[in-house]
Length: 89
Ligand code: SF4
Image 1 (cartoon, rainbow, N blue to C red):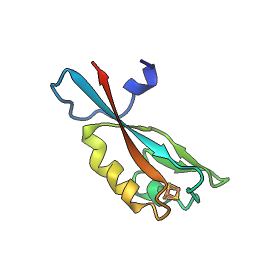
Image 2: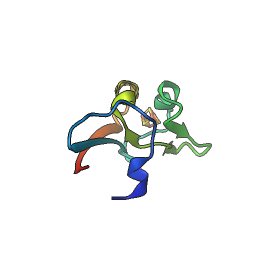
Image 3: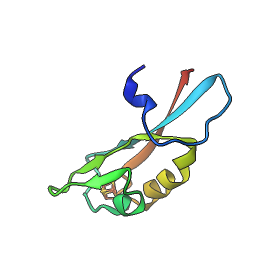
Image 4: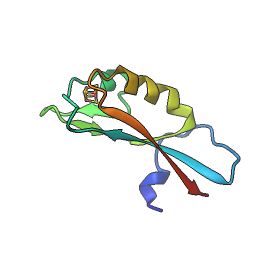
């Protein structure tokens, strides 16, 4: 397991023996750099001066899932997806 998967904002955690992680995935072919996702969740998304999107924190916890889903829904290019990962704790 890589260390970066453990980073991210603190949220509620389950008591299950399986740790459920979620990760934001960007379709770079679709992203146009409009930046609506950044306006919804500026702690997670940042559009650089060159128009390229930087995902500052790709890992999503249960505690910030609602905001991440709102950012995903707000993208007019449908360039964002939530990838669910299940791994043994
Ligand atoms: S809202 Fe969508 S198209 Fe715009 S920067 Fe974010 S991911 Fe890219």
